Image (tube, rainbow, N blue to C red; front, side):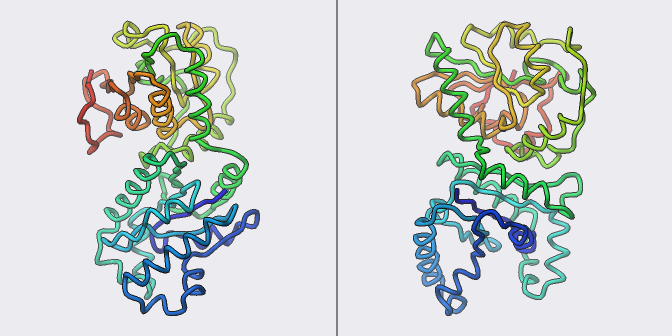
Length: 350
C-alpha cells in the first residue's frame, strides 16, 4: 500500500507522520535533499528531474506513506509521475484562517502569504480529486469540522490503519458494480440516491434524530463516510415498523426493475425502506461521492447505460458521469447549497 499525504505548508503533515509506526514513513523533502544535496539551488528543470528520479525509486517499494505538495502558490508541482507513485491520496484540510496564522508565525513560510490561501487549497483539492477520478484511485479529504483544525489526530491515524487493512471506496465500488451487473436484467441501469432524492426527508434524522457536522466542509469523501459510520454506532433505536418519511413520487414513477439505491444512510433504516419498495440497495461505511462515481464508471465499462438521480454533492460526480444525470431540487424548488458554484452543464434539473 502506497499512500500520499498531501496538504498545504503548515497544515501539519509532519505531525501526523510522526505518530505513525505501522508503515514505512518517508519525508519527501528530506528524501529529495538526500538524493540531491543541491536540490534547492537547481532550476525548475533540474528539480523536475530529481522529482522524477525519486518517483521511480519509490514505485519500486511495496508500501509507505509519504508527504507531498501539490502546488506552491500558483505553481503546480504535482506531476503524472507523482500520481503513479501512490495507490491512495490523503489531503489534510485545515481552515485557511489557521493556515495564514501559522504562515505568519513561520519565517520559512511567510513567503506564501502573498497568495490567496483559501483559493490555493481549494485548487489543490480539486486537482488531486480530478486526478484520482481519472485514474480510479482512492481520494480522501481529512477534515475536522466545524473547527477545521486538529488538536487530536487519533481519528486520522486510525483511518490510515483502516486503509492499510483494506478500506477502499474503489474496491467497494467494484464489488457493488459487479453485483449490480449480476442482478441486472437489461442494459439500462438506474442508480438512485436515498435521502432527499428517493425520500423527501433525511431518513436518519427522521427515525433517530441524527444530526452531524461531518459534511460541513462539503467534501463527501470516504473519510467523512467512515466517520459517519462511527457516529451511527452511538445511536440505538428499536426495531423499525414504519419510517416517518415521504417518498418522492416523481422519482418512484421512473424506477424500473433494474433500479438500485446507493445510500450513505443508516443500514437498518434503508433495509426497511428498500424492502418496502422491493428494491436492492447498496450502503455502507465506504459509500461516498467517489464510490458512487466509480460504480457508475464500472457499470458503463461493463456496457451498461446508466441513469442516475441525486440531490447534492454526495451524488454530483455520479450525476456528471452518468449517461443521464437528474438533479433533484428541494421541496421549494431550489438546488442544494452543497452544489453552489458547481458546473451543472449536462445535468437535468427536476
